[in-house]
Image 1 (spheres, rainbow, N blue to C red):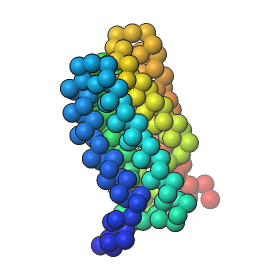
Image 2 (image 1 turned 45 degrees about the vertical axis):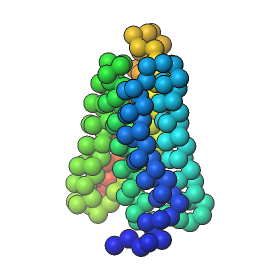
Image 3 (image 1 turned 180 degrees about the horizontal axis):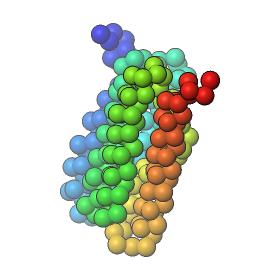
Image 4 (image 1 turned 180 degrees about the vertical axis):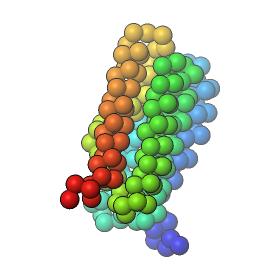
Length: 188
């Protein structure tokens, strides 16, 4: 079980906070009727992104990485990303492609990663640069599209499809990593 120190560490509290912000974002976004409402929803996403940044920074710099944090941080990340993508899909129809790629990539990492780990005892590193870049761009684009509410515009389509390309690249990168990890022992 997890110790009280782990449960109440600052990085883990920031993860809980990020999870709590998910329904707050949903409520704020779907009740936004003015520009201020959209800015408030975008502000919640900015707050969520900052808490994600600071929980990782504090955990690394202050040697507060915990087993609970290793579990809850990816859950908070994936939950936030998936909910934001599903929510924006109602306003920006091309977000459906982002939802599909998120499901494919995370499903591949979960089930493919489990299979590779079961067969080889090895697993991929937490997050690689293509995934970090794709996720960062996803959140920047999502924040901009929430804040400025510009559905059915060329600029929103460019933002969304550029994000989609980066997410596909990240998915291919992780898929290749799993493949290489699985076949690593064969080449020795």
